[in-house]
Length: 344
Image 1 (cartoon, helix red, strand yellow):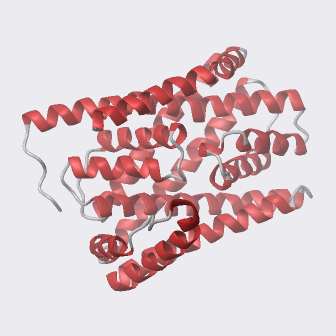
Image 2 (cartoon, rainbow, N blue to C red; image 1 turned 90 degrees about the vertical axis):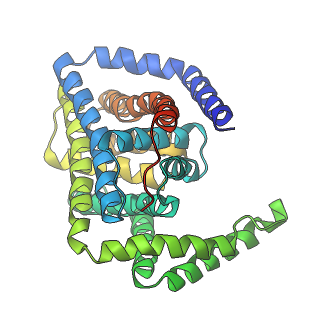
């Protein structure tokens, strides 16, 4: 069954790439017009960004009492990103990769799932810090729009919701279970006219909370363990800002620190708030509009957006396609040649 699911995912990835082949060719041709060493540096920084994501999960896993290798987590993160694009389901499909790999490696799948939520929380906190600077720039330039304000409020709301639920888990497994059961009940009421059954199990929500709370309580006992994921979240955003800067330099477009931070903030904000996986369509439009509002010519804005998304979306996408296959091969080899890890 697992091999069948893998085959379906790889097929969907192949179909997606073929459907977007013209766009990929356009990106490749555009990148060839830039100064090659700046493009190469941007690609290397993107690879460092992928490793940084794996390091972020490793720091969170360790705080949750799970020991996993950096290389493995980098592959899992990349595979999850790939699955979220080709089989979008509000991030649940990507989370299933973490849960599946946790079960195969014989450690807590609930802790692995909570680690994903913690990663998102730290990611949002890192963005909020940069977004505050970007909003100040937009206000000073009189470019702040209602859409950006509403998207920023939605981002803060999501961060607050995650922080609230995680704090509940740190205080009490029962409290977290009750909160998750209420959320499950609410979702079931909405979906009942369509699926005619309980889509989410309230009993499972309590079981999940009990298992996840153990890891959160362990993390609470080591508060300093949260500093590294937060630091890596900031370096994560710094790497992406550096890539955007290198793209500007590659095409000899005049830049300022304010323009870089404000445009990056808007682009990444709509990547998170967008209803499409990885912000497909929304990020491209938002970033292009943001650049043109800062007096970047439309042609240059389109080139920068196309190149930036080519490096930060398509490179991880293709790497994720390879990663999901590598994880399967490594999993088969480890299952046949070694004993499973001791459960944490």
